[in-house]
Every structure is written in C-alpha cells, then in structure tokens.
Image (cartoon, rainbow, N blue to C red; front, top):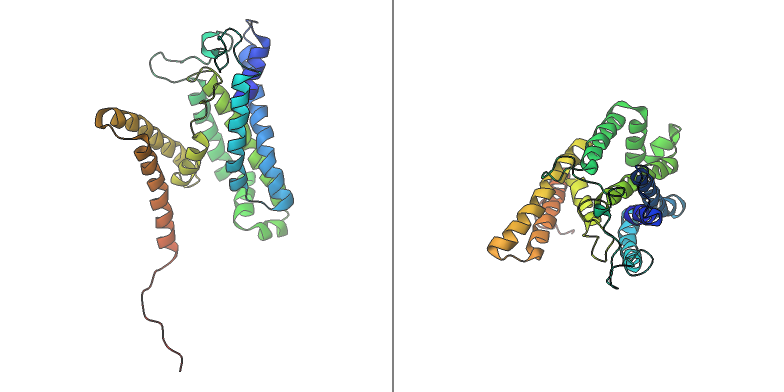
Length: 264
C-alpha cells in the first residue's frame, strides 16, 4: 500500500522535475502503510481479533488493489495498453537510485540500519520499550501498572505499517521501478519468518533478513544451475521457521513417553 500511495503521488505530479517530489512520495508511502496497518490495529483493540491473521488476510486484498491500479488508475498511458505504471526508476525526480553503483544499495538500506538502531535503543533503553514488552507479555499486569495495551497496539502497528509503507515506496522507486501486477513477491510472509528467526530482536532481525536474502539469491542461482523448482527454496525457508518453532517447543516442554496407568 505504501508503494501504491507513494507512486500515486509521484505519478500525479508527473512531469514535474523538482527535488521535493521524492520526499513527498516517501511521506505518502509512510501514510499509506500507516493507514493500512490501522485496520488490524483497530480490530485488535475493539474486537480482540488476531492481528497476524488479519494482516495476512489483508495481503490478498492489497494484491487485488495493486492489480486493479496497475491496469487502471496508475497504468502508463504510453504503455500500449499493457498493465503497469510508468517506470519510476527512469524518472530522475521519482527514482531511488543506487548510492554506490553496482552494489544495489539505495536509501532503503540506509533507512533499515537507522531503524534497527532506533528500535534497539527504544526497546532496550527507553521506558516505552519496557511498556511494550510488559503489555505484550502480561497485559493484565500492564493495566495495573497504568499502561494501556490498546494504545500501545495502535502505536506499534502504526509504526510498523509506516515503516512497511516506506519500504514499499523504496522498492517501487528503485529495484522494481514500477507498479505492476507481479510487484508483490511475498515480502509480507517472508517478514514473519525473519521476525521469528531474529527472535523479535532488532539486531537479530537484521541478521535474519540478511540470511533470508542469501536464500533468495542462492535459490535463484541453484534454480539456474541445478534446475531446482522455486518451490524447493520456499520449502527450505518454511523449514527454517518450522525447526525454530520446534526448538522453542522442545525447550519449554518436555515430551515423555510412557504407558497410561489403569485406575482400579
């Protein structure tokens, strides 16, 4: 949604060439992600729904909105009727170019490091981080301590959605280049695996993200050299999460085998 909002603002201003276009696109992307994240956040606070399930279901809604935009409102009028918007990466005022040519490093990478540092400091050194942990682990205790879990849910979901929207904008203005039907490649589902692999720690999530990136890059190479199907790489990524959850289960619980005693 951040990609749609950000690209929409940029394309609405086309062909304006000014340095303020890209910052406005970033702001629009942040707003789009925040607005979309408010749906599961409000449902969580009002009806106690599962925010993870609602967010995953909304992915399919977002995909359909993305597809309709690529063949409708945001379609390139000079594209000969083909779906997809103008190539933002070829418009200087809207592009998110590589900071170091040949490395693939753009502003999204820089922002990722900044966000990791800020999140680590907030969660480990700030009272807000303590309140977030308390509300997540013991909501009743948080209420007794004067902390509102509902407000923290709104805050955390809003920040998460805003950052996701920013990431979507950086992607559509950089590597992807345009709004298209196949723009979404399942980053939302991968993010869940990354979060659990990183043990919900900002630094761990950064390292887990690098690991998952290696599986994507290595998977493409393996598919080309060994003729492996793409599903094999996805299965490997799923197994990472499965084994990690199994470790948590076997650490917290002890499995015992025995016979049931008959009651006389």
